Amino acid sequence: MDKPGFLERCDVLCESLSEEEDALTREIVARVADKWSLWTLSVLAGASGPLRFSRVMDQVEGISQKSLTKALRQLERDGLVTRKMFAEVPPRVEYAITPMGVEMLEQVAPLWTWVAKSVGHFQTARSQFDSRD
Amino acid sequence: MDKPGFLERCDVLCESLSEEEDALTREIVARVADKWSLWTLSVLAGASGPLRFSRVMDQVEGISQKSLTKALRQLERDGLVTRKMFAEVPPRVEYAITPMGVEMLEQVAPLWTWVAKSVGHFQTARSQFDSRD
DNA sequence: GCGTGTACGCACCTGGAGGTAACTAATGGA
DNA sequence: TCCATTAGTTACCTCCAGGTGCGTACACGC
Image 1: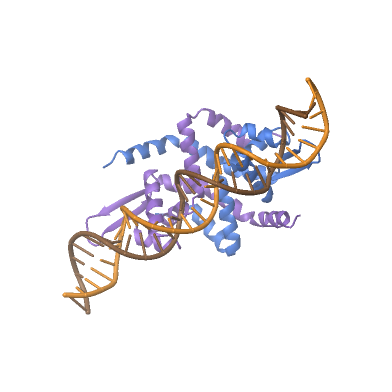
Image 2: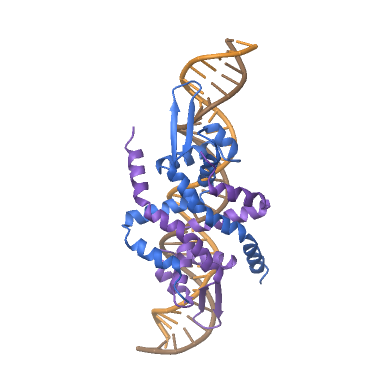
């Protein structure tokens, strides 16, 4: 079996990263699979401009206030989203995606579409496995 | 802000999936971020052939027996890995990556390398955020 | 006889993710 | 006067990932 392109590229890259950088890389990649982060980001990407907290919450169906707050904070901390507070009452806060956030989504898209396209393969693989003794 | 390519493609794809297929898609994507699954898969990809359980465990540094068993079972169930048992004592079991597993890694590679390449951006974004009042 | 090696399964423990519900502060409308 | 609104925060609870450690079956070399 040949060493696939994945390893050729990644081994080299990973060796050049410090332990701290490696941990951060894993953390960022992990965010892709987070239940809410990517969904939240894609809602902001799909909007025609900044969105208020409650507008985001409407579109990310099923999310709780607490989880949305947390997801947005993390995205903001990683520079994928901006947060703008207005000194009004009732409070108004607007969130927008950054160029970095857009770039991130673009990187995830091929993987996502491949999985969605291959969903049938996974279903049959699973049912085959499950119907064994 | 323009609707990025991610959504153009994914919205269409996601609408054509049943609720069950959509859940499965999310589950598979989540596996990418799993602490051990992808690492395990890449070890099998990098080997020149099938590997015994303990050989995999040597290379996936820090994993526990329990977690490796679980990761391999999931990968097998999803058709990304094959498991061959030999009726010997002491027991021998060999794991190998499937073509589907290789394909999966190839899809993940660009994302991973992009993140690793961008790790500096994330570091500065975080330290900026953290040094605010 | 006795330790060694193998690929687990099982029981127990811990931390973190994530849900619900209640509280907040100031304003404008009924 | 009373109430809804908004973007949180906090307390409380549950679930699950994942770690540790132990048991196991049996052939082999010493």
